[in-house]
Image (cartoon, rainbow, N blue to C red; front, top):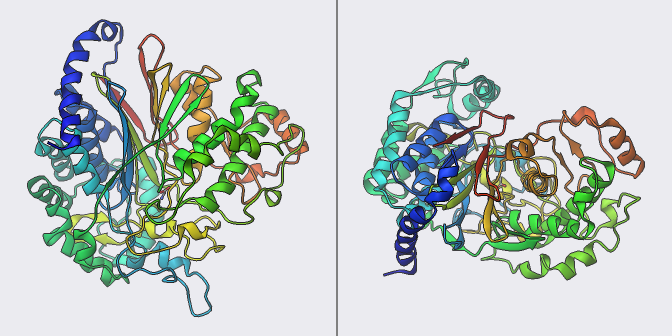
Length: 562
Ligand code: GLY
């Protein structure tokens, strides 16, 4: 019996034992379990699985497939992601199902004759596509941690794809904004090529067929046979160079999560190839000695401290981080208290640093803000935090008709040329250069937090490079400023990522006097450029075991409970 099968059996056994032991606590709760995701339909499908006695891992499988149907800009079977978990017993782990670079890829594949990075090629069309990890990841979770039959977890999404989902106002806007790009890559009769209105129903019978193939044949139903062939054909027809061997050889990887302590919190987050956990640890540990809870919420003093921590962490991110199977990352050193106090030696509470004075010069990586996160807690106490992505909104815009989905454009998360701008005009480092089968650096930060040894928060968000700062701020809101989970999520956010040397504030950041003071300290920002940051979906368990949920109102996100 494998270590994971033993673990699965232990999870189940403990689930039942602890379920009875904890019944007293649960009686006090009106909420026993919850799924919070980007769409109501997906959260409902996940929660139905919990109601049927499935555990949080079963619900992860069902919710992932449902998001593919109802949230085509980021929910996916054709992208990749990360899962962080904590079982009811307190065992923790993480799964990396990030995409990989195709076997045909090379460090200079996006450079033109002048040696300049061609951004179009890494963002749109077949050459932008990484080999998807989502299906292998989801099925791995099911095999090692799930308890219900796979077909029961996929069937609701197959039915949803056949029956159709109703387009929301935000979704109609998002689809219509990208319509020209869909048509440019796929032709005018492409599936998403029409104009959508809120209230329209989208049925996707081809996606239902593909999901059915996965239900019947597992990984082989996606990575081999007609589903894989249709992806290879379309990717190559639109400028890519992938093979069936790329698909056949994809493997997800269990990795040790990043674990760090902040006061009486233990934070468990995703390690490389995501930068999320390391940067979150750096930011939290850099502010820890300053007792930020004593500084008034959103005061210029609190903002200044957090911005300076964010600046230093993003500088490190660009230099040190990449796929741990290809580059050596000093991860324990990067999150050690000694190192982080050293990083803050030049912190001046009365003056903003200049990013050019913070080491590692002028390199940083940024990803698109079109990712999706969901958080799950089952009645046994198992917690699951998943962030998954196609990278750009609707990925590469390459639509595979036979399976009814867009392919990712995750290759743009590599640095095509150290020093050359990524999707958001920013730049990446050597550790994140392209190599066949390498995973591109991510910012996704699925996170679970314990307080005094007990589950406290399950959270994460989309938002590209702003993911890490959104998670950082939400944790501080909940812990230091004692906000409830919905309030922690609703609170206005800000973001600094070292380069460019400016702070981004959300439009509802209204404390004008504090912002004036922040400017006097030497920070740069332009409130005209404000836009929304992240969509955090989270679950909180208070000191008495009471569960509360928070779905981000910035999107169509929905918390479903039972
Ligand atoms: N493509 C978004 C991320 O991986 O962070």
